[in-house]
Length: 138
Image (cartoon, rainbow, N blue to C red; front, side):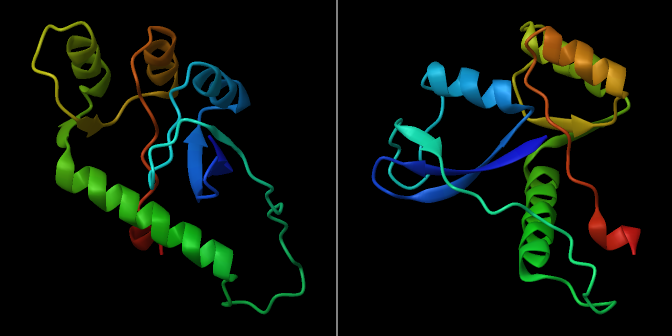
């Protein structure tokens, strides 16, 4: 996954998550990107500062950007868990059924192998990894 800072023609800045840089390029060319503030379809990459780990930080201190990213990931995970159906290890099977119209269209999440996720993406099934539960990792 890659995160880009994006900006619309009206100057609104926001983040976009993509499988890779080619995914951004394709979605941009097809006009599939839109500003969440004004719905403008003229979206481009904004200038980004690279994330560089500093070796002089004191242990236990989290840089503000890292904290912001953790909050975003936690919020995204919570949103998915509250608004999608958990299908467990049958994720790939259920995602295909939805994609091919064999079952009701709905948002789902669950587990799958990296290989299954790649196969789904190659078939055109919209999938994305769910951020890890950072609170349970500590």
